Amino acid sequence: MTNVKVLLIGGGAREHAIAEALVRSNFEPKLYALMDVKNPGIKRLVEKSGGEIVQGKSKDPNLAAEVAGKFSVDFAFIGPEEPLFHGVCDAIEDVTGIPCVGARQKPAQIEQSKAFMRRLMWKHNVGGRLRFKAFLTVQDAIDYIDEYAESVAIKPARQAGGKGVKVIADVQAYLSDEKKAVKEKHAQAVFEEHMKPYDDIEDRILIEERVEGPEYTAQCFTDGNIVEVMPLVQDAKHAFEEDIGPETGGMGCISGKDGVLPFITAEEKEGSIKIVQQLINAVEKEVGEKYKGIVAGQMMLTDAWGPTIIECYSRFGDPEGTSVLPLLKTDLVEISEAIIGEKLHKINFEWEDRATVVKCIAPKGYPRRRNLAKDHPIAVDIKEIENLGGRVYFGSVSEENGQLLTKGSRAVEIWTDGENIVEASRKAESCIPYVKTLDGWGLFHRKDIGSPELLKKRIELGELQRECFKYRKAKGLVGRRIDWIPGKGKLEYVS
Ligand code: GLY
Image 1: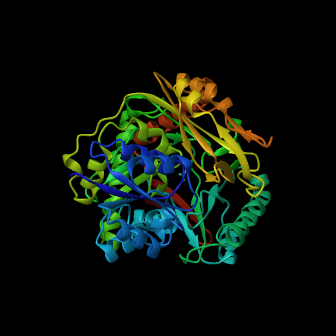
Image 2: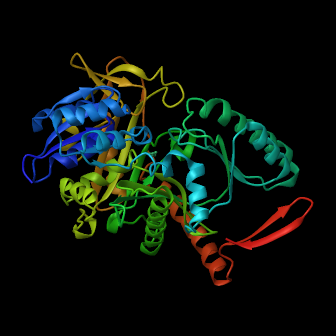
Image 3: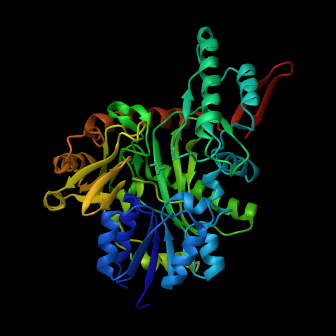
């Protein structure tokens, strides 16, 4: 294939990393981009490739189809989830006939609706099913909370930018009333606050059984038939060190050599891939369309199930995608063509065998007071960072009149590699001072991502869950549940 033209949709750090992987293809594609704000990193790559940028709403299906048609691209690569939920792939494919790397609207429900994903798992017997209930009204959720004293996760029923998830341990009877009050208050907040912007799914509140363990992300390419897993990654969700503070889109992540993490074994990775594969098969059966693009299992190693899926992404995670894309040695244009043509089994996947760390740098105010984190001029010394062995991926930054301005979220992601995660983390720390605001506004990042102390904590938690799971498995307890139905008594079953 020569003179390849690719349209990239989306303008964050993840899309910057996708753009970089696309333009290093042997096909030397012309890259076009549709993005909401002018990401300076993507802009540079597009210009160098001879393509063009369109600034506009990346989740607008009509605009996406118009742009793809205008440039007659060979295919479109969709980065973020919202364009998928809004039917951007459907519009591009159906209106112009141009294929997409990205899930169509119906299969993308596995991320858009957490309730859809859970129902799918139970209906199609996908491994690692968590008990759940989805509610249409806040009163129904409150009635349920009143009836059952359980440890639960209360979430928006839709993907809501990673916000609004609260995990509540309810294990001491003497605190049960207080815990009930916390649960009810949170169900209310999910209904009134987190789900407020969304009217594209019916379910509002999801209550799931609470599980514990180290989390990790299994990102995969899929052509709808097979899934090809990438090196495992762990994202650090909380804003501040020691995993405290509000949840963010992710403050950085780690990946280890051999495609695994120090707290997840190759066998557990295999178990995770199996679950993602089952989900891909199940979604096709359910909606009658193949899932083509990127799919990721947001996994947890639990004592109940071993590898368990907590949530599903219909795209690369951000920053998880930034972690692994620089390691990809196989040509991303070739992979994209294989996804589209359902020939992924023919691709020989190769990755650099390095540990990586990504550290996100955000303006103070993020994530709760984004208005305060907005419109600060920044300077990034890319040359110095590259001299130190790092790479810069621009996130929520816009280039306006020659100036880089923060846009309220994570502004820059610094990627580094090493023989091990600790080495990569130290390298990343040396790069941090080369990102500065020019108006004195504060920036923050998490020093502890990839530190020996945090790794030790993750390894210990992993060992505990692994041992408990092995014990349960040996005793034939995996999947055995007992529910207490008030007025009826004990219900024992195997799920
Ligand atoms: N890092 C979490 C996400 O991409 O949703």
